[in-house]
Each structure stands twice: as C-alpha cells, then as structure tokens.
Amino acid sequence: MSPALQGLLTILIGVSGCIGYFYFSNQFLDKVLFPATGKNAGRNINRANMVRPWLFLLPAMIALGLYLVYPVFATLWYSMTDRDAGNAFVGFDNYRQMFAQPKFWEAMNNNILWLIIVPAASTAFGLLAAQLTDRIKWGNFAKSLIFMPMAISFVGASVIFKLIYDTRPVDTNQIGVLNAVWLQFNGGVGSFLILRLIPAALVACFVAALAYVGYNIARKRLAPSHKQGSVFASIASAGLVSLCLVAVIIGLKGFFGLFTFDFPYGVPQTWLTTPTWNSILLMVVLIWIQTGFAMVILSAALRGVPEETIEAAIVDGANVFQVFFKIKMPQIAGTIVVVWTTITLTVLRVFDIVFAMTNGQWETQVLANYMYAQLFVANDWGVGSAAAIIIMLLVSPILVWNVWNVRKEMR
Image 1 (cartoon, rainbow, N blue to C red):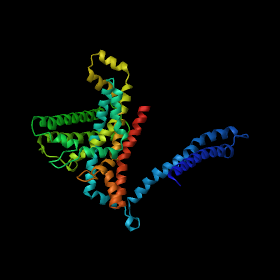
Image 2 (image 1 turned 90 degrees about the vertical axis):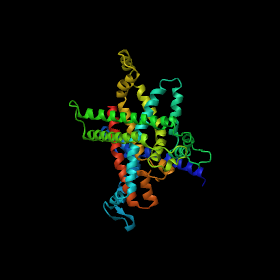
Image 3 (image 1 turned 180 degrees about the vertical axis):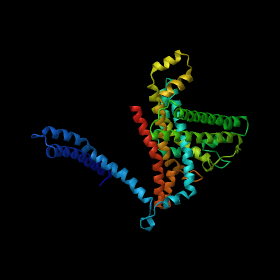
C-alpha cells in the first residue's frame, strides 16, 4: 500500500471512529442508560446532561493517561530498578550513582546558568522590541522579522549559528561571521570599547535590573502591610529572590572578569570549545528564538494598558522612562511573569541546541542531554530515568506557578 493511500485510510478510519463513538455513545446514553421516557424522564435528562461531558472527554482522558501519566510512573519505577539485573528493585542507588558523577553536576550548573540568562534576556529583549515597534510606522514588519525565528526548529537554528561560529585556519578566509569580525580587533581603543566597555555596561544593566527585581519582591514580602498568601507563593517568592541573588553574584563576577580577561586578538577562535563562553554562545540561539515569542505576548499586554493612565501621567509631568517603568510595567507585571516562566520551562527542557552544536562536550552539558546520553548512549536506564525525574521535579513547580498566576490574572 502506498504511503499516500495509507495516510488517507488512516484519516478516514480516525474521523469515522470519532464520529461513530460520539454518535453511538449519545444513543446509548439517551436510549439505554437514561431514557427520556416514563415518570423519571426529567431526572434522566438531567443525569444524561451531567454524564455527557465526561463521556465526550473520556477518549482524551484515556489518551492523556496513556501518553502522560503512565510514562511518569514507569520512569519513576525504572529510576529505582536495575535493568541488567532483571529489573530488580534497587531503591535510590541510581540517584546516588547519578549524584556521584561530575557530568551531572556540570549539567546542573549549566542549567542554572541557562535559567538565569535566557529567560531574563529573552523577556527583556522581547519587552524592548514590543515597546519600540509600537512607536514606528513599519512596526508590524519589524515584528514579523523578530518573530520569524519562532518558525525555525531548534536544530535548524543550531545549524545556522554553528556556521556563524565556524572556525577556519589562520591563513584562510573565515566563513564564520563571528571569527571574521573577531579578526578585525587588534587590542586598540576599538577593542576596549567593543569587547570590554560595552559588554560591561550591558552586564551592569542586567545586574542592576535583577537586583531591582529581587529587592522589590523581598520588600513586598517583608512589608508589615503585606497580606500573607499561600505557602506556595511564599516559597516561590523566596526562590525568585535567591535566584536573583545568585544571578547578581555571577553578573558581578562577569563584570570584573571582562576587564581582567586576556583576549587573544588576531587569532581565529574555536568558540564552541571555549568553556563558559561556549555555553553563553549556545544560549544566544535560544534567546534569538524566544525573543519573538516574548515580543508578541508583551506587545498585546502593552496595548491593553489604558490610555487614560498614560495621559494622566504625561499631564502630571512624567517623562518617557517614568511612564514606561512606573505606569506600564506594573500593569503588565503578570504577563511578564507568565512569559518569563514559560521560557523557563523551555530552558529546563532544552536539548536540541546542545545536542546539535556540541553534544554536551567542552563543559556544555545540560540535564536533558545528560539524560539522553545515559539512556541511549551508555544504555543505563536507571540513571537516565533518574535524570528524567529530576527534570520533571524542576519543571513541575514552575508549571504549577504558571497555571496559578494565569488563573489569578483571569480572576
């Protein structure tokens, strides 16, 4: 049977099966289980109407249970068994073995670095693009260009940036854009300005923004007039403040490092093999993709800010920056949090970019790539499943926080 005919037959069977299920389940409900006849007709109609939504949801619930719930429990079981010993139960031995591996802690450290940089940079660039593109005539065209990377797969984007970071021998033409630009630096004033002063200014702004966010969260939680919320909200706030503090420390270290680092001018660099820098260059790929997503969501939120509040602020003498930071930002804070946490979920599950560009070599390992290496390269199902559980435990609180925040905004 040809693939085209097979696909058409699959569609016909699937659609016919759905139509048949809904039709016959309705008939069974209305004619057999709760017939609308006799002295109990009214009660049966009410009962049928109560059961009908669950009857329609049943196929989806079975599919979700089969493809989402069952794999979670199966993975948890595999993480506590030894496949080579006939799936014998070994308790937390696989977790102890995983925690003893340096590669796991390398992946954890890199994931923390990704969590600090990628959501913050993507949200900040998206917010900046949303604000600026709304002020120009060709803003819709600019938004289309910024959003375009969202249409590219992670692997496709990785291939593009791998060519940008490409390195050729010294005496040959560089096809990598980054090395072609790098070779123009010779240690003069331009090198100091572009490689040290401008990056240091950006890092300083990044550190100041994170310090401001952490300070505001801590101040609101510790204020005497603050109403105590749920335990989960308190834990989430404490986690965000801690994350901001870690980010500020790392940012300050990078700020001073930019003025002390000895740049090898005039020599092509193998960017993807240089520790720390290679991880940041991998993050650039995801930031490039996610900025478009952040821009679209935040642009819609900015357009929802009432014009009356902006006009009132301008009449009171507020400048452009005061209007943005004091009027607009507080009103779209909920949307910023949702965008931030959504990108954070993507970061925790990032695999394609690292696998396609470095495969976790040169100290670029992340949790998802570590899990893949243990499962399918080392064929260690126990440790691989344990890594999958760790990823799920890291993702779940952020997912719950996201859902809770969205429901809060809806209320």
